[in-house]
Length: 272
Ligand SMILES: Nc1ncnc2c1ncn2[C@@H]1O[C@H](COP(=O)(O)OP(=O)(O)O)[C@@H](O)[C@H]1O
Ligand SMILES: [Mg+2]
Image (cartoon, rainbow, N blue to C red; front, top):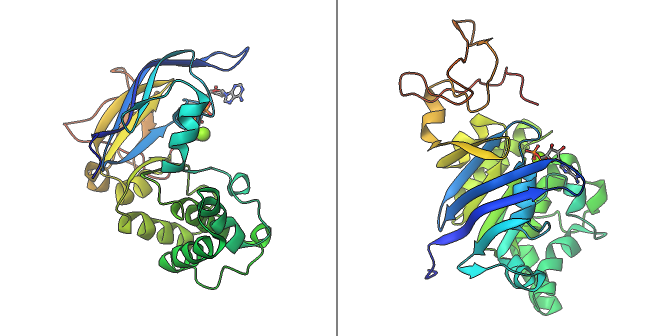
């Protein structure tokens, strides 16, 4: 057990892309040790930008980032901490670059200083633990989209990170792979932060969720509420109809709960 209770603690972060508009302004966010959280938000609300800031791939213009108790002040700090952060890119082609699956999954452990034999063993064990035995000889770029995503998760888990960051892990996946990923995440004894616009997926994999809009956290709730109480509107800002029932207009703002319940739009809303 780590002595620090926060995996990520970011305070008053601001970020603008060069020549672009401000994406995050005075943004604060904490992920506790052991927390399994989801982050939901419209396209363009800044979710991927947040993940890239947490990984040190982008540098904030203001504010502070602490990771695992360490203050991140330079690329050197991120370089030291990055192996503990398992980042699953939205696009698996950004993750896989070796000829074979075995080489891709062994790459992280090798990079961490394991011997070729140790790295191979870790890779084989990781593939087996994820029910991907037999994939080791496959050609990475020839895998299907779903297989690439599963192997991407294997490349990250092979490094035994302290936390997993997943950016839209279910985009474009078939149901079978989606179920496989849900099972992997549920069996995992690690903290994670999943960016997704799929409420149902988050309800089944996370315990808490954050609703993000225009670079701000507008909502924080318990994912279990996503299971049965149908509707949340961290995002809805236009009148719309729920499952053929009543129509609400949201004069009370984009983020609210009805009767104390959380409301989701199911799969038929217009996000994305
Ligand atoms: N490389 C970039 N250069 C300039 N603007 C960008 C870049 N990447 C994203 N943006 C802009 O930043 C905002 C947030 O993007 P992003 O973090 O990708 O949102 P999300 O992941 O929530 O869809 C959007 O307005 C997007 O157009
Ligand atoms: Mg994104």
